[in-house]
Image (tube, rainbow, N blue to C red; front, side, top):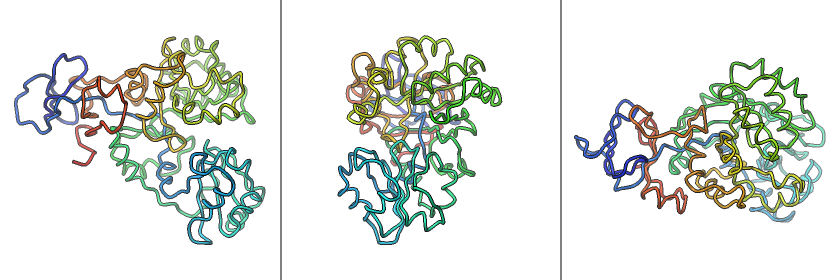
Length: 416
C-alpha cells in the first residue's frame, strides 16, 4: 500500500509512505507506483495504544445502566434508572458513586428496586452491591457487598452480551490501534474472546506484565510483596497503586526484589513529591490517568484527604524528573476516548499540565514499553493513525474527530 502526501515527523515537507508486509518499507517524496490513499497533507502518526483498559467490562457497558453522578443525581433518579426494563429481569448498573444516594447495601437497593435482581458496580470497579432478589436468585447471603470478588461472582450471574465489535469499531474511529487489557485475573479464554477486536492486543498476566492488586485493608508487607515479585521474575510486574501507602510498599518491594525491564506502576494516584526521585532511580514506568482529576474533581474535593490532593495523578512533575510516563483510559471506569484524556492532561493545574505534544506521547509509546515513543521509520510496524489535518492543527484541539483512518500492520481497520 502507498499513502501519498502526508506529514510525517522528522520530514520538512509532505512525503509518501509505502507499506509492505505489515511494515513501513519506504518514506520519501514522489515514491513510484500508484497511490492507494491520498493523505491530503494530513499528519500520519503512530496508532494510539491504550495502555490500561478493561475490555470485557467496557464491552458490557453497552448493555448496562449508567448510574454515576453525571447520569443520576439522587435517590429518586437512581430508583427510576434501576426500574428500567421488564420486571423480573436482571439489571446491571455501573458507575455508581456515593454522592448519588450514599452507601449501598442489599437493603438500600431493596428499597430502590424490590421487584427484580439488581447488581450495582461502584465506579472504581472494585465493589459490586447486590439486592436481595439477586442474592436469592443464586443462593447467596450476606449484606450484598462484594469487594474485588469478580472471579467468584462470574459464575453466578447470567451471561452478558459483550459488544466487543462495537468497542473495536469505536476505538478504531479514534485512531486506537492497540490495547493493553489490565484485568488482574484474566478470565479463562479472555485472550481468545478478545481476538475479535481489530486492534493489536496485550493481556496482563498473559503477554504483558503481571498485574498485582494492592488494597489497603489487605496490604502485604514490602518483604511479602518483594517475595511475590521474585516468584514472578523474570517477567515484569504492573502494580496497582492508588494510595500513598500502596506506593510506598511498592517502592520498598521493588528496591528489595530489584526492578525488571518493563515494570510499571498502574495509576500512581497519589505520588508524594519526595518519592519522585525514588521512582526515577528504580526506572519503573508510571501509567496514569490524568483525566480523573478533571472528570472527578468535585468528588475528589470531598473524598480525598487534603494532604493527598496536591499529589493526584501527576504528569508534568514526573516527566520533568525523567520518570517514564504513559497513560491509559482505564475504561469503562473512565472515558474510553484517549483524545479526551490528552485534553485533560493539557488542562491540569500549572504544575501538572502537559504541553499537547507531550500529552499525545502518552498514547504513542511501545505496547511493551509505554514510555518509549514510537516513530514512523523504515522497518517499523505499520500501526498508523491518519489525521485530516497537519499535526500543529491537531495539537490545538486534540479531538478524535480529526482521525481519518487507522491501520494495523498496514490493514485499514476503520470503514472507508
